[in-house]
Length: 219
Image 1 (cartoon, rainbow, N blue to C red):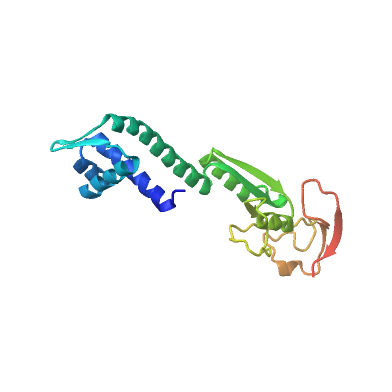
Image 2: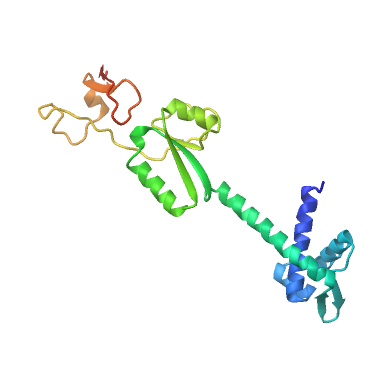
């Protein structure tokens, strides 16, 4: 089996052959690739030794392909093109420009900043399919840890061992009050102002149309 270093050398040699065939000169090929002429000459010679056939006829005016070299060139162009495409494709996938991105969200974050963010990302990366899953923070953290989703957008600072976390944005919390409540006329209310007030909150993680409510006191 060919080692990675040997594979890299062969790929470079193929590029030498392509450049030399195009320029019909080792010197011009060296200028094109930014290497020494001796590097091109030695690389092509090593490749010829490996395959056991001459690819070029050397003369004072430059180089010309042999019959075997012409046949080899067709395959070399295809091979280099496929390898370069594979490298670009893998790089694009690694940067999230193609493929699928699995995202976990908390239902109460499904609009506003996050919706705009995902829409902008989709616009810039039309080849990416976005797969969104709703759930609780604990479920999403476990899913990220076990590689079932790629990223999760959660509220607060959840404990997520083995995961990278970043603070993206902040949102205001809105409180619904009776019109005659002592705080109703205030434009902004801080948490301390709500101390000892009674709330109606969901018994479970908030979601659309969730009827399960309970009374709690903020203390």
